[in-house]
Length: 184
Image (tube, one colour):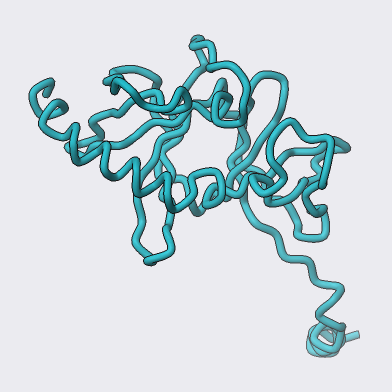
């Protein structure tokens, strides 16, 4: 069979046999493995230099000065209703770009126990979010990715950091900008 004939046969295959995949950054919180779409990730930085803000919800760890920008930092473990993360040698902050309903975006940091790797997960290997049994709210879960016989919880960052909370975090960042500048 010629190369042209092989290419023609491949083109004739139904689109359903083709699988698309997306890349996800995987990380651990406690004993669970989570992932966020890599397109939302701006960078990963070492944990440190946080400025705490009084009278904030327990899941807001504080803010950091990231190259002159004030970025709020969320403790995902506390956000999911658990206890605050214990800071260890591998603890880091993943800086995410989160969009709100006005199509504007904000940078938000999330505290994770350890970053693992970037994985390609085919769409046919992603199951819908369970309606029960998870330790976090079902609307926080985008789906369950099957990777090497185990499940990775794919997070819906836009739901975890809802528009109302982003607006509140934006207000915190504006109020605390002078404090961050004083520390620089």
